[in-house]
Length: 126
Image (cartoon, rainbow, N blue to C red; front, side, top):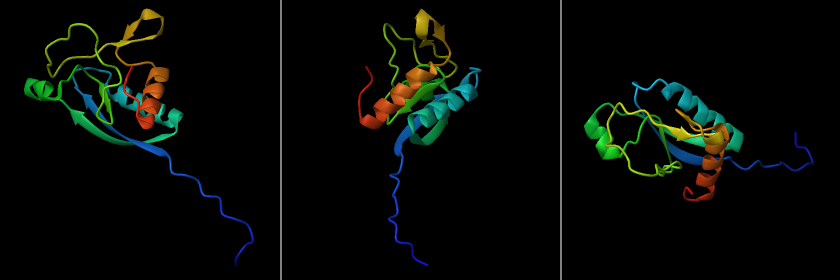
């Protein structure tokens, strides 16, 4: 049976490729992945996530691993480290700037939502 109305087509959601680098030695790796999924949902973006556990110092050097967790959105780190870096090692935990000048093991949800939106728009990290 055919109806006389038009079919509204919903555009597919924007999609980005994410490499999620982590080390099990840092306790925030599971929470960091959940945060990524929450940020993508809030941004209305679909994710293609590759979870990559960094297990050796050689892997850390090869990937320029700056600590766990590290989010690479379409190959770019939206939270580049400023100042002198540390030698990449597999058991490094990462520190993120948080609102109010605080430091934490994960980025703030709003910052990750903005980074996901910027990645979809093709903007480089600020």
